[in-house]
Length: 213
Image (cartoon, rainbow, N blue to C red; front, side, top):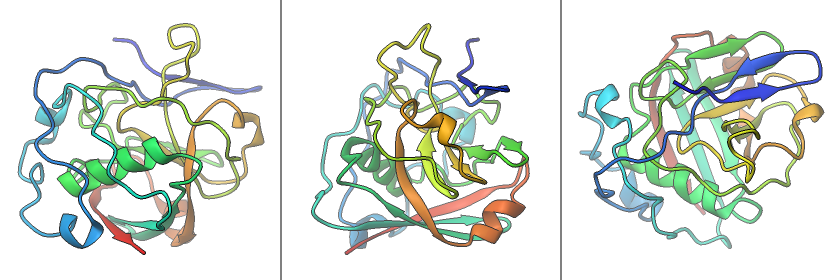
């Protein structure tokens, strides 16, 4: 299987595969935050590995870029609070909201921890080579400051458009400006950076809660 490779000046690290294909149509849409955090969440009780390539296409655009979207990633180590940038990365935020509301991330792990660099999660296979069944168009503009929330992707050799993985995301443990201009950053940690720093490989994403303002 191909793996997404993050190439830096000094080190090469796998950051997950943006899986393509799949036969199932999306089973829902990214509703208003007040509606999407209710139970049951469509995928919450679906075996994690069965979520791989579950969808056949990118979800329709339903968020309002004029509103503020926040995410709380509830983990086995504690909560991580983030603000999502729907202005600079609307399609990426829309997709993250959709998957969160569907329960796609519930029970998945942080499959990668690179000290002083990033933590990465969102792979239904837990190995760095899974995804929902589609990619997300690149929206590359925001910097990789400490606590930046960004999407993994396949390398330029097989992905010249720099499309993002459908579900695999990473959070920077420190500023990583050498990644600027290469990956889609779509949010920022606003609380729980101590939790981000404490995450290790195999720690669990219990749930992602979305709020809208």
